[in-house]
Length: 177
Image (cartoon, rainbow, N blue to C red; front, side):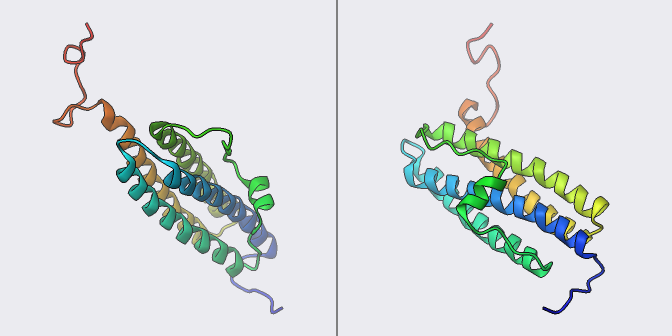
């Protein structure tokens, strides 16, 4: 194979690929959970959540492909097995239960927020430790996407306590003194 001469050492590229494979594993597990909830959600918010989660899993699928291709562009190999994903992910499966819709939303918020925290650390490491500003920029874009998805999910949960005018109830209006 031809050597890669892009201004990063092999050690730097290897370090970045390790970070990217962790991000790939997180994205893949989050995709699986989002799809599962998309299939299994029931209740009055079925249509809204079913549609939202379809948008999210489509975005996650695109991200997964982009992360894997970034690993290849840096000369590495993306993890590509469930065993590998489960070994590298920072997220947790919860296969034993089928939560209520709001619990599904809350679980996905937690996962997106974990991914965001991980990406922040990886962005810093890519720039400071590995001097790969291109990957730092790439990860920043992924992080912003997760921030938007987490915001949408949080808004769904928070919206349950809002009045029809969109304002949070006051203590008096909520019957609390």
